[in-house]
Each structure stands twice: as structure tokens, then as C-alpha cells.
Length: 376
Image (tube, rainbow, N blue to C red; front, side):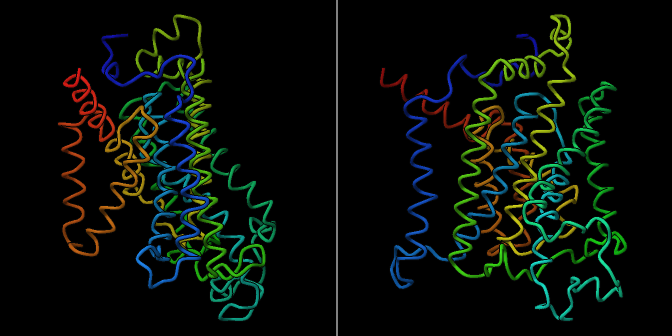
């Protein structure tokens, strides 16, 4: 397998989950998310230099949702060699499932003071459509957050992988899938708010969604979910299942000759990554306050791949770093130089492709290795 174009990607050490330094980093991240940020935001006075603003908390929460998507992308692209350019659709489906529940929680506090969501009243709908039947149940919608992206991914992946579609052809059809979904959700008659989507949320579980304590609980849940998914992904890639995935990435034909069925492995990791994106979307919507078909745009899915590439594929931590770096830069650029943001993003991706094939994390590891050699 040394002749594979992917052979330069790092392979985890067998049987290792996390070392002492790794567990220390996880504990520090957990303390940061669950203790330090809430204290700095809720308890430290606004005039203090140590106060963490609501804007910074909201931005970090949004980026953590994106980081979950980047981590999901790393499992299928970095460790299995499947480049998806359609993962935005799974993110949006999870967001819409949560958004449906939040719209029902508005109740009669909407502009039209109706039990129906405002957009349905505007379109002169008299009753809820069939797919809104359980939208007033938080538990049911949470199940849909998992089931809808997972089922779509399973069906799509089964037919694609069974047909041996791979490489650029697979990437193209995933782009077609997300574009078709975007066009479908833009239509008013589908019952998903059309171009405007869902917004103006009031409550979640009967609790005002705008109050600081609610937003902080959502922030903490997002951070803990990201950490939990990271640990799950680390366990997967270091297991026998993960080693088979990497073998499929490097030489799928040889895996078949040794008696393994790549279809089952690819389908399993593909479906899991879609579910992870769905969960990210469900956490994203109540914190950002809106979900619309633009989240399904082809560009949104391409950005997920860029986060993984910039941070460093097949490293797990790399895509998380990439999501924070790219979106942090985006937040700054769109405020200071909004007209240059897309040029910067394109230049960044080209630079990483040409000069940093292992991304930011790969560069950091290389520099660290050089310093150790110099000291030795």
C-alpha cells in the first residue's frame, strides 16, 4: 500500500486511544467549555477586561457546530478516502428538524397570533402538513435529527457504493444531491418556509431561548458534544474497524482480495458522519436563530471540505483547528475587508493544497519535530 497517493497521511498507532497529554488536553477543553466560559460570561461584570461578551460566546458556539461537521468530514475523507461535497444537506436537515420544533414553540406569540407558524398563515394554510405531525414533541424531533440525515445517507450511500462510484464522480453526485435538496426546500409548498426558512424562535422546552442562561446551556452542550464526538472518532480510527477504513482509503481492491466487504464499512462510516452533521445542525439553529435553504448550497458543503483540508486530514484534531481558523478569519475579514474574503479563502485553499498537504496540524508537527531534532 506504500504506492498509494494517500500513503503519506498519518496512520494512528494500534491500540492507542489517548496518551497522558491527550487526556490532559481533553480535561482542559472540558473545563474551558463547562466552567471557565460560563464564569467569564455570566459572572464577570461587563466592564471587566476578563468578561467574555455574548458575541464571542455565540461565535464560538457556531464555530463548534462547524467543527463537528469538519470532524465528520475527516472520518470519511481523511480516513476512508471518500470526498463528499454534499454534507451541508445533512447539517441542514438536522437544523430543519430542530427548527420545526422551535417554530411550534412560538405558539400564539407570532405576528398572526395563530397556532400555525407565521409563514403558513401567510400562505393561507389551514392545517399543518403531515410531516409536521410530531413537530410539537421535543423527543420526536430529536429522533428525526438522527433518523432523517441517517436514512438519507444510508439510502444514497448504499446505491452509490454498491455501484462502485468513487473519486470525483462521487463528489459530483453529492453536489447534485445537496443542490437538488436546496431547490426543493426553496419551494413554499414543501412546508419549510421557502426562501426565508425558520426564524424568530421564542422558546425551547418552554424556556425563553434569548435569556443568557439558556444560551449558555446550549453553548456547553455544543462544546461537550464536540468533545464527545472527538473521543468517539478517536476510538473508531484506532479500532479494527478504523484500520479497515484506512486500508480502503489506501487500496480498496486489496481489501476486497483479503475477504473484506468495503460496502459495509463505507456505508457505516458514511451514515455515521451524516448523523454527526445532523446533530451539529440541530445545535446550530437555536443558537444562531435561523435556518434556511442557503445552508444546503453547494458552497456551504465545499467549505466543510476546506476546513478539513486546511486543518489537516486524517488527524481528527486538524479539521477542528481548521474550522476555527477559517471561520475565525471569515468573521474578521467580513467585518474589516468584506469584499476580499472569498479571495482570501481561495488563496488559502490553494496554498494548503500546494505547500501544506497535511494542513496546519501537519505543519505544527513538522516544526515541533525539527525543534526536537535540533535539541537532540
